[in-house]
Image (tube, rainbow, N blue to C red; front, side):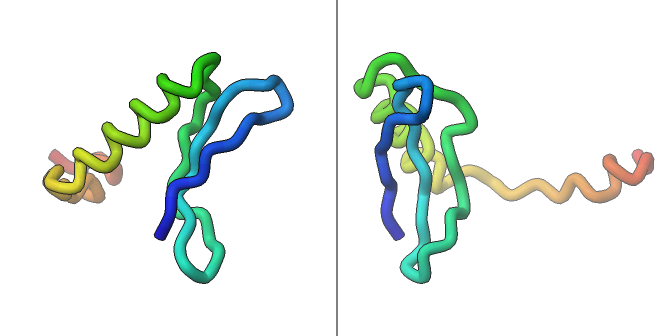
Length: 64
């Protein structure tokens, strides 16, 4: 997998995480004016590798 940095049509920096087969599995969802801010977003995603997984399906379905 790899992170890709690029500029969008508004000249803002964005990132996307691409799998070896070319699929995009995550993206920045927002543009950044400065490349450094975009790189900080990538670092936050990398650091969140230890984040827990929470099953929200019951809450979404309206169950407590």
